[in-house]
Amino acid sequence: DTHLSGALKLKSSPAEPILAKGKVQLIRGKYRARSKVLSLSKGELIFAQSPLTNPALNIRAERNIEILNQPKQETSLFE
Image 1 (tube, rainbow, N blue to C red):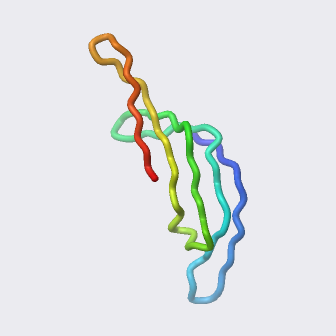
Image 2: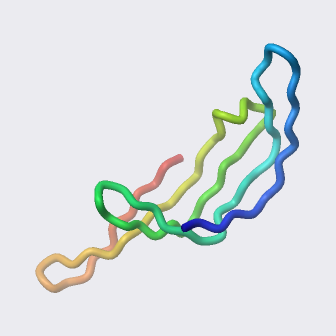
């Protein structure tokens, strides 16, 4: 369940991969990994005249966990 915003310019030519330029930003979302649901608090897919299948990623996924009745925040960064 993810909401996205952004704009891409696509370029295609015969026998070449589709190239993209622009950025897609995450507005809000959730991600399921290893049977856990993570809240996506930041996310960008960045294309710099690169193949559509190979964006640069800047994503932050978080979830709150409880250890010995003390809340702790767990964060994963993918850059």
